[in-house]
Structures are given as structure tokens and as C-alpha cells.
Image 1 (cartoon, helix red, strand yellow):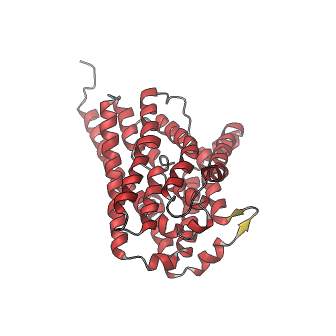
Image 2: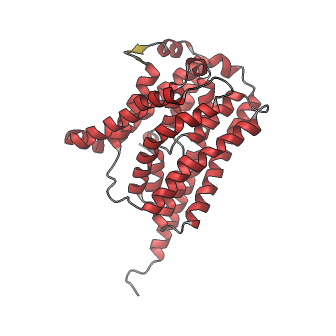
Image 3: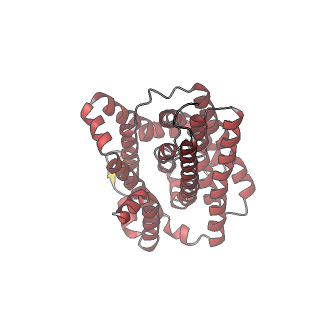
Amino acid sequence: MAAKDFLIKNFLIIGLLAVITFGLVCPSPGESLDGIQIGTFRLPQVAVIVIFIVSGLCLDSISECLQYKALTLSIVLVLGVTPLLAWPILHFGHGYVEESLLQGLAVFCVVPTTLSSGVTMVTQAKGNVSLAVLLTTVTNLLGVGTMPWSVSKIFETTVPIKPSEMLFELIWLTLVPLIVGMLLREVIPAAKSFAKTNKKVLGLCQNSCILLVVLLMTSSAQPKIMSTDSADLWMALAIAAAIHLVYRVVGYVSATAAVLEPREWVTVVLMSSQKSLPVCVSVMSALPADLRRNSGLMIVPCIMAHASQLIIDSILAVRWEVHDEKKAMKAPLLPS
């Protein structure tokens, strides 16, 4: 039972390690699957659509979340402040680290906050879960409008991207499926009940779709990844961890300066420092064909950054939870 719980809890990280290894050692199956077309969508795009339908289906009630100061601060940090880190990464890393790795890290910086793991961390740290859910929803909806412009700036020296074309692509890959999932939950009571009862199963389904897309990207870019200098990969890992630490400090300082209540403070610090791997995957899927050829290499630093934030935040979330429990134990049973 302990082994099963460990596998379920760490399914995404273990799965990412497995599919990347398989894609590098045996790229043929992934290359074959990558060519499958379902209607007008390629298989990776279908997987992204499923990810966001499930995300919409699993969103909980947000009726008790209207903490306007904390919400506004979080939106500004997630969509306005944290994406700015993409510029120094591209500027100062140029000539020292493989360009595709830097572009992957820059894409990670401009995407909105995480879809599920952040809410899980907030729950564990006794933060405002309803606020975290609303923040996830709002930043992912608004991010569809901000990301095309940001991504076009990241790749402007490589391949020109028209923001309007990417906006159209992201609307169909992320926004429409997310809204469909939310509507299914609200309109069909059985769907809401199913999502509530089978949240773990749906989470595993969502993560499996991420793994499928990563496998296809890794397999297609296998020659490029294998020829990349290991020093560049280690440097990308160091930058990935540093990104999250910088975001954490910015969130900590901003939330403290705003004098937020403890539960909102925890939520803002956690959610504003996390970025969404599924949205990174959707952005890579929406890139022009010339850039998609390197998406397998670009997704590697995104995975590194995602793993870094999961490891760092899980440690801190547990620490905050323990601290909260100790405070509760010291509190008098009756008011003095």
C-alpha cells in the first residue's frame, strides 16, 4: 500500500523520467505516434485538449474566494511580474547555454500558474484553497491573451510568430476545452459528482496525457537532445531551480508588503511562484512547424523547472503545515 501511495503521489515525476528515457533510447514508437492525425488535430494537440477538459471538470467551488487584494496581487505577479524573468535568461544566457534550452526556460516563465499541484500545495499548507482555485482559473483564462505576445518575443530572433495566429491556436487548445469542462461540471450533475468522486483517477488521466506529449516531443527531438552538451543541461537545471527561488522571494516580499491575512499570504506565495507544465506543453504544440522540431529539447528545461518547484514547495508546504499544527497545539483550549 505504501508503494502504491508513493507511485500515485509521484506519478508525474516518475512518469516524466520514464518517458524521457524511453523516448531517448527508443524514439521510433514516439515518432510514429507523432504523425497521427485526428480530424484537424495532431495527437499531441488532442492530448492537450483532454488535459484542459479534465482541468475544467475538476475545478472546485470558488464561492468563498473573493479576497480582492490577494487576488489582484497574485494576477499581477503571475502575468505581469514573473514573465519579466524571461528577458535576462535569454539575454545573459546567450552564447553560454544552448539556445533551445534558454527558449524553453523563457516559455516556462511566461505561462500562468499551475493547474493542480499548486492547489494541492495550498491545501497542504492550510492556505485559502478557494482563492487558489479562482486564481488558477483567472490566470489561465487571461494567459491565453498574454502568452501569444510574450512567446512571439521569445522566438523573434529565430522564427517570426504572429501573435494572432498563436492566440487562435491557444483558444482552441486550452480556453475552449477548459470552459467545456467547467460547463459539463455545472450543467450535468452526474459529471460534477463523477469528478468529485474520481478526482485522483482524473488527475492520473491528465498526467498521462502530459506524459504522452512529452514522449512524442522527446522522441522527435532525440538526435538534437543526444547531441546537446551535458554542461548545457546542467546549467539549464541550475537556472530552472534559480527561477523558482527568485519567484518565491518575489512572492514572499510582495505578500508581506501587502499585509495579507495568513491564509491568503500562504496562497499568494505558493501560487505566484509556480508555473504550469501543461500550459508549456500546449504552447509547444501551438508553435510553427519550424520551431516544433526543437520542442523536445525545449520541454526538457520546463520539466526541470516543474520538478524544482514541486520538490521545493512540497518541503515548504509540509514545514508550514507542521508549524501550523504546533501553533494549534500551543493555543489554549478555552479563550482567556
